[in-house]
Image (cartoon, rainbow, N blue to C red; front, side):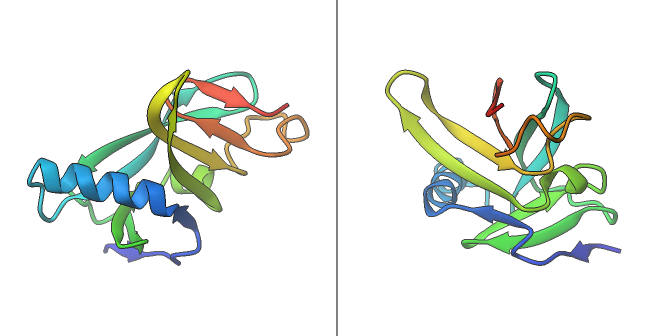
Length: 127
């Protein structure tokens, strides 16, 4: 059965919410949600996350709403995403994109990544 999780578990900033909403509107994707998932390992102390627009929510997925956006997370990825904050930045040097900052995304060395990981296409850890 579809599980709803506390909205405080993963937070979308207003910029991230606006970016997702704009993409959904531009592509006419009514009924879609933002799926956030573990996309594999990154540097030695964190994991990479992936995101997709998805309208196929499975019974084992967890779904909630943050800043007006439906967010879907699978049962494995939720352990890495608890307490995460998703932001959208437009950096003149690196370009525009989403950043997932999760205190639970560290690998086995939890002491090194005190401030969590900011993972997008590549992993940038604060060691």
